[in-house]
Length: 171
Image (tube, rainbow, N blue to C red):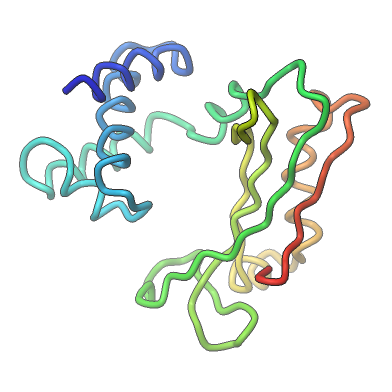
C-alpha cells in the first residue's frame, strides 16, 4: 500500500487531476509489481478482478496522455538528451495494429524510441515514439521520419543541447 501512496503523490506532480493521479498511482504500483509492460500482467496486479483492472487501465489511457506526462519529466538543466531506439518483441501479438516484423522478418515486434535526460546518474525518460514496419508502411514513412517526429516534440526544449544517440548492435 505504501508504494501505491508514494506513486499517487508522485503522479499528482505530473497530472493536475486528483482522480487521474490516483489511477496513475495504482497503475504505477501494479507495473512495479508485475515487472512487465503487458496490460494483462499489470491488470493482474491491480486490486480486484483482473478484468476490472484492465478496464480501469483502458479508461485511464482514454483520459490521460502518457506521452504528454513524459514531457513534464524533462530536466531543464540537463546538458544533453539521450535518444535510445529499442526493439520490443511481441511474438503473440497477431491482432495488435502497431506490431510489425523487424530485422529477421519473422518475429513480431515494434520499435520504441525513448528520449531521456540525465539526472543524478540516471536516465529519466521524457519522450517516446513507437513505430514498426506495419505503421511505417501504413503512413508511407520511414524510421528516420519517426525519429524526426520524436525530435520535433523536443526541439524547443532542446535548445543548444546535443542529442546523444545510443546505437547498439541489437538495434
